[in-house]
Length: 141
Image (cartoon, rainbow, N blue to C red; front, side, top):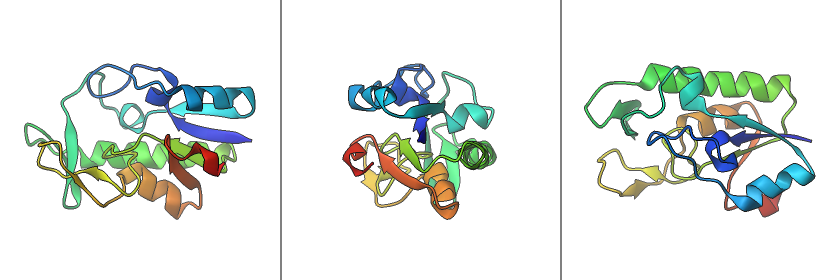
């Protein structure tokens, strides 16, 4: 089975801060499944590193106020294309991210708080009938 995975969870330095967030439980899934690394922000055309961004209403804004909604949406669209092309049943996404968060993301105030909402890529993958989970839910596979 092919699984789309947030690239940062596999140790790829693609996060906004230029770092990764490797998760050994996710990495270990490669012993059983084909893991497809993907970073929607990178596929949307954003650089690494980049200024932090959070969802504010229906937009994604950087901490300096610049609107990066278009780039986030492009990355989400690319995630759906790749997941469908490779017949991925699941996507394991980085929790709390404005792109990949599921059920809980940063609140748009850049104060470390959270709101109950899905990230842009999580929403797109759900609409495409891909099962989305965070790195904390891999037992669901």
